[in-house]
Image (cartoon, rainbow, N blue to C red; front, side):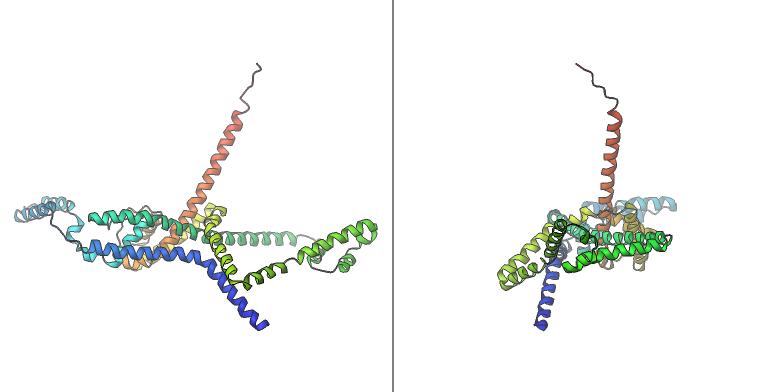
Length: 387
């Protein structure tokens, strides 16, 4: 029986883990599929568009031909004319759409759309592409924020547990320092108190509990019987946990009811999205330090394939990206490698979002304190005159 019960417990544990991870995996997988479908759509529409020579492009070629025919002896005037002419040129005139709107280039564009970064280097030109871009952003941005909220719960749980463990360790160190100054008698008293608490909490018999407490014998029979009755109730409450196992066996006996119960738990997991993020209470200084370290690590890795960027430029680029500002002044030479960095962008945006949420809570608390302080200052000055 024991050999057959262990595989059943293992299967139940695997099912519990699967249904607990299922909502998170569902959100991430839907975002990945949405990004790949958008990349296929934009690469087909914008990559296969026909390049029409506009009047502006023809005027640009005519002016360039005119400057080249009438070369002046003054080099400064020639440089100024060429510089002014090149400023009027557009980048799409000299780029083949198929080279620009590849699958990876379109995927990079889709990531910049639903993350609301919007560098501005790559944008749709055709009218159909612009309409589809608006429709794609209309559904992609809420999906992205849903993934950010879901991952925010995971990061909030990890951060809160790490911070609580750090506080416990700090309190243990302080307690050990305080206990080092105590005498041996105080240590013995603390040990005896701890042992007495442990003995009471253990599920002992009534006679053993009565023997361990000599004060019960001195009391009258009436009070002694009342204490025995309370101990019996406490012991019965401790042994009510096996009833839960019977209910589990009842659910497992009927697979349809078990499926309904698991589905209800999955629906409850969907309803709990964002709850852990609301409960997070971590110092804002710690979050700023985490963001600084996170961006510094990326700024040290990014110049390995983007040779034009140094550490400071890469740090600036990562900060502008994670805060979804996206000026577009720093252009990437290899967006394919940066796509593998997309997980870094999503997690980094989540960390920045948590920092903004904590900063918002701190500002609300500050405003409450200022309003209450101003109200307390004004209340004594108000005088009530009798009618």
